[in-house]
Image (cartoon, rainbow, N blue to C red; front, side, top):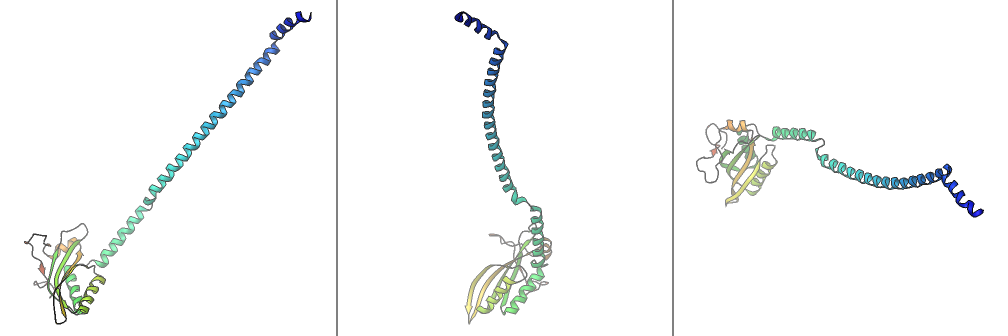
Length: 218
């Protein structure tokens, strides 16, 4: 009887709603566990990808910050540079040709040298300045010439020595050819009436001597 009741008992259990509830619960539990594992793996992958993206974004922002750093305060630096240029022009650029010639003569007298054949020309006008070139012969002792050269370089008027060439020496005196540049504002250079600086191979423009009537100089 025991063996005959076993199939019957098994059928009862299989047809019992409670049994199917257990089976459904077990399947649901397995599914939940599977989904939990999958969710955990996806979260880990997503979190790692988000971290990589965040790090990459931080690097981009840092690079952009470094690239734009030189531009910060650029407007102030430009304004400061313009103010410095204006101060330099007002302080060291002479107002006229006659002031250049007068200053050269004063430096020659104070140093004890003798300037002869002083000639001035003007270069092509620039947007802010025009170069004025002086070509002269200078005679004096070595100490006198050195004093004159130093006074040119340290003078408030902006002088640049372009050339200093020995042309002779006699009795303790030295003869030199001196070439000096300074600058005028374009309008002042145009008003000076100076001839243009000759270009190589151009013999049509003769330099203007400071001895020309109406101009100061020797």
